[in-house]
Length: 286
Image 1 (cartoon, one colour):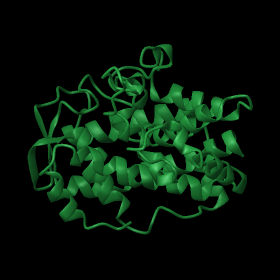
Image 2 (cartoon, helix red, strand yellow; image 1 turned 90 degrees about the vertical axis):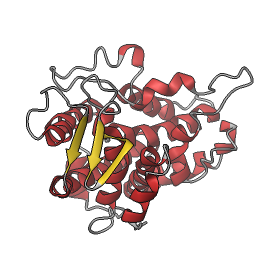
Image 3 (cartoon, one colour; image 1 turned 90 degrees about the horizontal axis):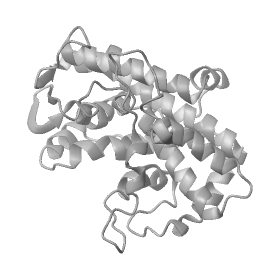
């Protein structure tokens, strides 16, 4: 999945959707493939069995019969309308993120009120998949959401922010790329993730058991806190070149040197997402 990064970055400036979709196609697919490669044989068989029933989702516009398709399904269905003209999956909009203030003590209480946040939904999806009496359609839906939301949780700006819609309100310059459409969120969603995943050896492989155990240790709440910390320590501190909680200017600039320093961290976030997805698939289906 090595891609011509410079071409993709330039092409993304042409389209409003491109910066946001670059990570959440390539990034989500990569996390899903890492998860599948490192799950147990029984869990992989469970994934295949459920995705064989993806037609129950009744979304022919958004295929979910493969692990790659399942990983991006939750974003693909966002614009789909029902017979009443309203978004069919509008209820799931807030499930993709959790607005936890990086400049206050970590807490999921307000961000996850009534379970409407990404970490709460991950735990809910695992519970549904473990329920022997849950209808097949519910299980398929839980699986595609679980695959996607585990990726979302490991994009730091889906786990922590500072009142700026996860960096969407912060214009950004990325290296030599300047565009009115480019913001801090799209940098981490698209350009930086693309660069990170294609730098160095492939992330999609079977990891040693000790590495899997170390990276996948902890709970969903632990992972939430860690990703929130990355948002503070890395995303905002690098963007502001110092105090993450200082006032954010209308535009931030990431130099080529900044990007080089961020690549290993962005790679690690994808790796964490994949190996933790494997753990969740084992728990739910293994």
